Image (cartoon, rainbow, N blue to C red; front, side, top):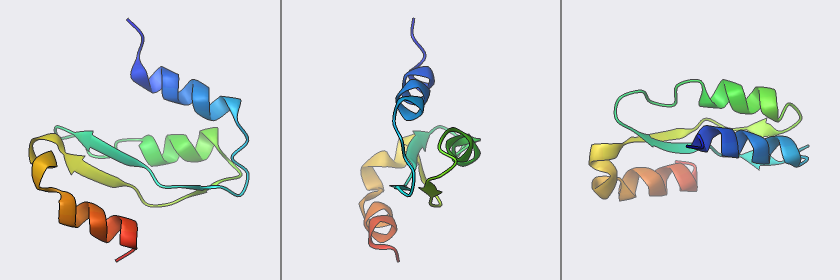
Length: 74
């Protein structure tokens, strides 16, 4: 079985994200963003990693306003 995080890490290591903006988003069942933001900063050191949005998986159906505020920068 392939770990999805490994696939994402391979993708990030394969491209140059210099001066690119990264907006992390994840769903979870209690772990929040975990180390995602710090891992992104290590994998893409010349990128601009913004504060991520984490959505509790059981509330994913009710997250539209939260997502719209995050995307809109509010």
